[in-house]
Amino acid sequence: MASDTFVQPAIPRFDGHYDHWSMLMENFLRSKDYWPVVVSGVAEPAEGVVLTDVQKMELEALKLKDLKAKNYFFQAIDRSILETILCKDTAKHIWDSMKKKYQGTARAKRQQLQALRSDFEMLRMKSGESVTDYFSRTMAIINKMRIHGDKTEDVLIVEKILRSLTPKFNFVVCSIEEANDVDSLSIDELQSSLLVHEQKINQQVKEEQALKALSETHFTQSRVDRGRGRGRG
Image (cartoon, rainbow, N blue to C red; front, side, top):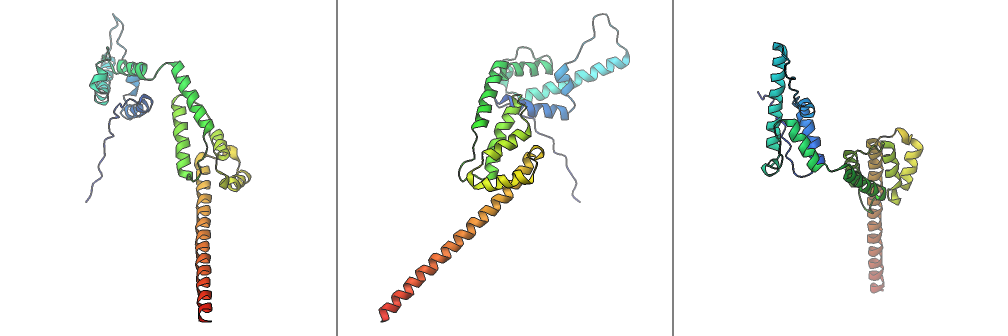
């Protein structure tokens, strides 16, 4: 009898792409219930304060979580980078140091976001590009924008996609706009509708190509038959 096995999630390794890594690492630490000690640290009692037995146990539990979170950071971050972090006493120190080193200044983030917004505005579907590929390109930019703090609403993304499709989708766009309230249309619903229409268009093209090939074959055969007839005459 086969038994279900639980696969432990892999520790996200820092590969130089801080925004992506920090998102994965935060989710990983949240799943372990270590995120609070990473964000807030472990507050030591003020001098002269006497803790109760319960408070001592709670403090020791937090310190243990902090040690475990640090251990994950030590496994996630390369030694050469860890050596540049002067204070590694707590998980919070390591996290804050990585954030300062690799997230960049507020000004740099604004510049990156402006560049991404420009890419988004210039985005157009390429001739021959599939709906799936175009959505992948679009959402890759959107996700990067959101990592940098952008709050673009889904309705604006839907409208942008509808405006930037190739001419072969013009009729489809009109149909979608007439049949749906664009304000309430999700990105996934839009992609689903476009995929259905794309399949119909592709099927129509295949049928037209098959019909054209059949007509050309019939025309060629007719010429051959007429040539044979003249030869016998």
